[in-house]
Image (cartoon, rainbow, N blue to C red; front, top):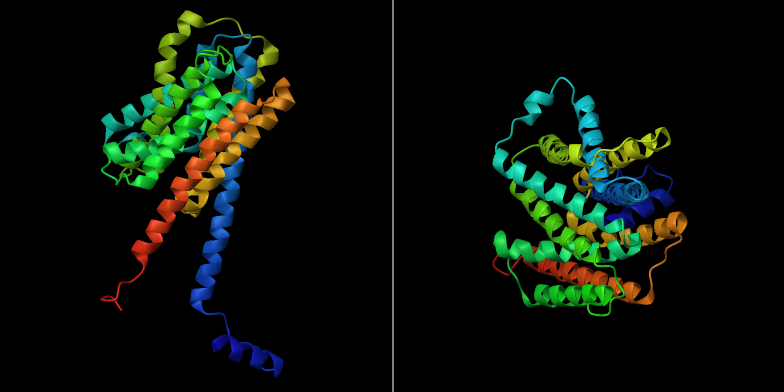
Length: 322
């Protein structure tokens, strides 16, 4: 009825009724969600370009040097960004868990960078799409979240998709693909720990990740160091800078929009990785990789849609609430 009155007032030449606060809130939320999705896609694009730089460098330099650059440049940037507050932000309410989280993230970067030295970006991304489903499984096993039939179906289907990509026993996929698969587990572990250390600020978590990664990778660096050609310095800087900016975009994206609204767009990483692999390395995924990626993505979207439906049902008022 209010809409009809608004229309009538406009047609009569009178002043239009001001939009309700509810409508303004809904519009603001929709705008924030759109911005969050946009930032999330930008983050995935930047991470894909970081992988391109890492893959190019790994052809001429030991992966240990590339891994160190990823974290060292990141640490330098956050130190500059949070100058004056760095020491206070380092203080954590859960330093042990922050260190463990940093170890998981360091493991993810190391495993993934080692994998893409030998396999295509699209192949690695297809296996990486397994991560959201593993997070769902880990949340049920370690954080006490419910593991219903829908989640179990999604997890089994996602692993079936991973097997299609890997094709074990055929000798088609390089053994390094197993490293990309292991990176999914370390990524899931880091994501679950991110939920656990939520009592620390985002800045604190970012700093700890950079510090732990830099510290651990520095231990191995003396054993693998070799002279860097001047022409390759920009690529080393790009690995860290793209990772740092991508991480910042990711954090802001999840501040602006709900995780459930963003989650389905995570599979666009498959598109970006295929595009960069074709543009920079003339590599395209074969039909089995595409099929496996579709199965994994479909499983992830299925789990997400089930959870969204269950959340909506739980939010609906019961008869006793009315």
